[in-house]
Image 1 (tube, rainbow, N blue to C red):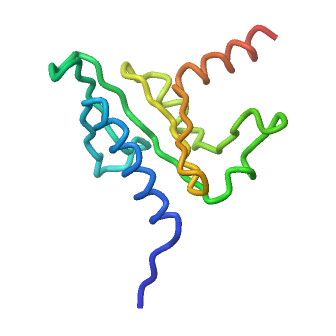
Image 2: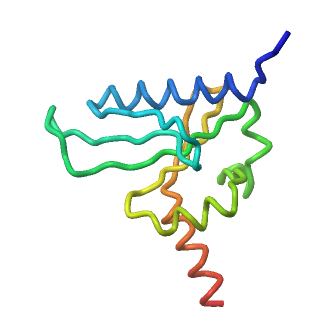
Image 3: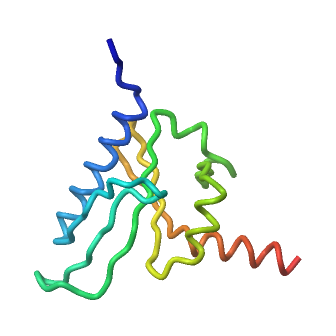
Length: 126
């Protein structure tokens, strides 16, 4: 009999949490069925009116956030695929990387392009 990995359950809970948060501010989410590194497309609305703004979300989740904490627990260092990171640098829309902590039911996030550009700047500037 097939079993369902915990990672699949965590992903579903993470996506549901994000979808609920975005719906709470009137934004829409579309789950992307083809997985090229993005899980959701979020469309931004202002007071029920569509805007020209949208962004992608790459959702991650964990039962044990502490294993990804560095710098005395101030920073989350979650692994991402290097090919996806290079690919995202060329996106027009922002890509938001989220990490859902199942223990606290909290989602942490960052704009991955901003993070990568800062990191590249530090590497290139020496």
